[in-house]
Length: 500
Image (cartoon, rainbow, N blue to C red; front, side):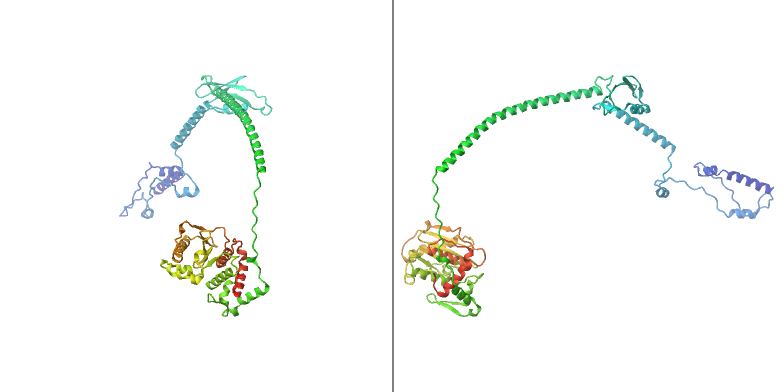
């Protein structure tokens, strides 16, 4: 009997094993509850022939009890979905809801498009009837009724619309037809509205053309009136030009100013013997040798002192003071050909203007009658060389023209120097002759247009040539190009102690 019972149980298990889908469905169903298995006690059991033996029971108890896995909701995509791109299965209810949603959206979009088409303002369209009929027949909301000359189209609201078919006989558009869809219900349909707008636009164009034509006519009339005025003005211009040309011809020609002849004496070239003598004095073997001595001023000229007249060298006090003494001696030899001048040395202005300011007493004895042999106020010009640290300038007291002149080869200006000299002239006249000279009426001029130096070392040479040409009564007719010649000539005149 025990064997029969065991076989019966095996048949039942095999029966249930043939239906895996049903068992699996029941097992994973949320309403499925697994039956409780009997627990076996391992106590003393009575030996019953109908029951299995204790060995089979002990063998079954070794296996754990089968437990149903707990179900849980997944709030994020699972790993399998992320890797293989799977998507969770949609529920049947969700599919129904999505289908209704898309249907509703489609109906709304269709209704909006039809409403917009009613108020659309456009020209007549040419469409193919065969393709249009197929498209309309496929749409369930529109029915096409064939007619000979007209077509009636039904929409969703069962309102019939009349469609007028217009044949096109153009060569290029043989297969196209022009369809106009005016509404029978409304008085102003789509076709009527477009026609009305076309008429309005045409009317506007006509009015615009009329107004522009009228404006063009007015402009033409005004231009014609201006043309007559322009012709009259053109005639007046030609008449005045001819009259002006006749007046210019009748005027006497201005007298051409005679060109000033450049004097020859200041530019007499040196002979070869004179150039050789000068270059020999510039040589280094004569640096410590006293070449010449000016006795009246007691100035010794050595080779080192004379080298300041070489190109690109600055002039020193000894050379300038000796050359000024030579200019005074030249005037004494030939007073008819030169102006009566006085040449102060380079230390006069430093004494006159010391650190404490203007000091007339420091130079009062420089211009005595016994020392000069003539009154200073009687001179035509008085030259005052001024050294400004690294630059030489010249101040001139022009008694003949009653002016104070300031000459700078770099076109500089310094009114303080002229004010000091004006005060000195008043004190000198009062001290030596007892006369009061009103120098406030004298003109102070910063001479412009004079030759300018083009480098940084010829300022002393320019100052000497200003004095030389003014003492001759000549204009300043030299330039930077003459400076190398003037350096050699000045050295030659110092070596001979005679200015030509």
